[in-house]
Amino acid sequence: MASSSDNNNELILKERAKSTFRYTEDIAPGLKLDMSMHAIHHASLSEFQEVQVIDSYFGMTLVTDGKTQSAEHDEFVYHESLVHPPLFWSAILSGAESGKATGGAPKSVFIGGGGELATAREVLKHNTIERLVMVDIDPEVVEVCKKHLPEWGGEAVANHPKMELIIGDAHKYLMETNEKFDVIIMDISDPIEAGPGIALYTQEFYQRAAQVLTPNGVFVTQAGSADFVPHPHAFPMEGSEDNTESSCYSPIMNTLATVFDHAIPYSVSIASFGEDWGFVMAFNGTPKSARHLVDIMPEEIDSLIEERIETVPGVPEHRFRSLGVKRAVTGKERGGDALKLYDGESHRGLFALGKPLREAIKSDKRIMTVENPIFMY
Image 1 (tube, helix red, strand yellow):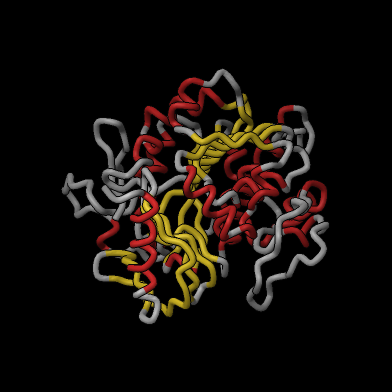
Image 2: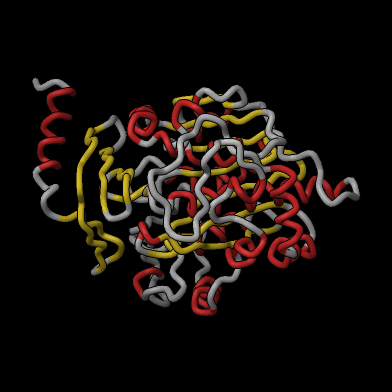
């Protein structure tokens, strides 16, 4: 029987043979993303998935099971959008309870998934954080990213004194923990059939997550494709009960809305994904507070950034950045200089969904449960 090392070497040779050709990725039925591929730095088969690191048009890129997870060109877009809106909203909600603009939260954060370590990197930029627990099921992804993608966080984040990195099942951890968190961030695989992440998108899981949050806690999850003008394939035909290979953006929002007072969708364009990407934030509170999240003045967010954000020491900078993206050069940047995308203006843009997408969301009433899962293409 061939060893795991032999299998990995064969996989690397197979993938390198393609390196004079192109990198192609299925985005949707009938739609592919095609680009030049300069090198393959890693290819292996973990217990859970195929893991690759390639150098493509978008720079160094992590690919699992044939799907781009993040790329050097714009990984900050995904990770800053996932992390900073819920963490700053946690600060605002905790302050409202005491009659102040902001409170001391967030102090404790849980990350489900996040093997690249970039989500943890963004959390650790908040100077209020006292404890961060990250649980990822695949040690291969974590080790590969530490070796090949240190700019995503690397050893500086994995060994940060505020960070507890656990290799394990995030679902099991949250089901069994007695700890409470100010913010729960789910940076997990898409809900694909036979994938490891499907149980983390169900009503039953969200009900448990709500119990693990502090009273003003905030939950956020990545929610898959959220194109400004959704293609017909993204939603089931009227009257159809087919739950396979469609968008899960609306069902995730609908499911969270059965558990929390508010489930607020937002999105951002990510070039390396070939589409707009969605997130859903959920929390309890009054309708007025939910409206404030969307309408918050840019100056309020910018003030919080200046007060709370600091670069994580020891994380190297990406080798190149697009025009208009500030380069961190000292590793000691604070405030807005420590962020590449997120600020007060960007915050408002994240929540400004296009009318076609809003109308499509309204028409989709599906709920995700253990007995009735919904799978993404």
